[in-house]
Image (cartoon, rainbow, N blue to C red):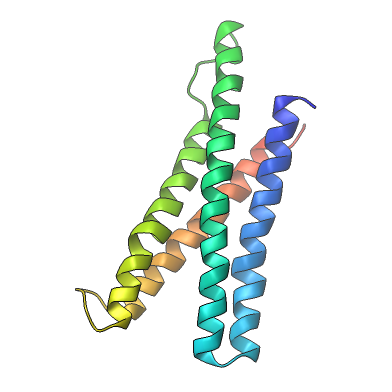
Length: 145
């Protein structure tokens, strides 16, 4: 399997996973479970999503560096690519949205911190949605032509 094809598969599966968690699983939980229970299960889904995202981002960064090096060595482009920037942006969304905002949400839930839970939840949701959008763009750009 070529590296470009592998990048396409990984980004497509990852984008599908993020869309499934955010657009299907989380809303379904809140539709059928009590709010606190749904929040606990959704929190676990988002934890798994964040750590899976870190692992996939590292794999895609390494893969994209290899592809960029090949492009540069064969004079077909530079070592910087749109796909590399997209992977870095997705990684930023994971780190900011989950690893920075999520702890602040826990503090807000306990009545501490500067911002309300609602504001932080909105910010976390925005990072998650942006991550999904960036992954869909990356998957589209990685699709064979």
